[in-house]
Image (cartoon, rainbow, N blue to C red; front, side):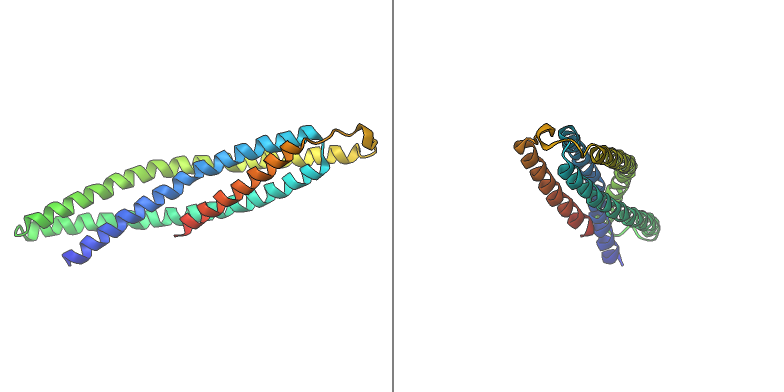
Length: 199
């Protein structure tokens, strides 16, 4: 029984560490939204319908990915509650073992250390989970604002579609290249983040 309990404690510590990393990744997603907003603002300044359309598509994709991250966060939160319950059960078992036997002092010290680690990780995770939820709210609000701004600008561009080609503002090729690179980098990082959260 002591061996199984020891293995359960080790497994719970690893689980809490993984959930800790998952919630930390919300900060990365927020930085991606900030960069996307900068690129979108540059596109609005260029008055290019093509770029605005590409940005709207990118925002729709990003919104879907954030929705998936929200679901993964809920799953991680459920795992946290399970781990917390197991930690409490482990504490109860440890208390019972201490009352029943004093023969193996080394084992008891090991169990105490692992239980203390679990308690520490649980407190850290509670703090990070709160921060992650607040960050998630910021992500959703940012997406809604960017999407509305993009749609409004596209409608304005359509009304002004009668302007002659000679009067249209030329789009800076370097800006377009930078926007494409930013979107590719964000796509790679989101895929990596999703892969880590699912493991």
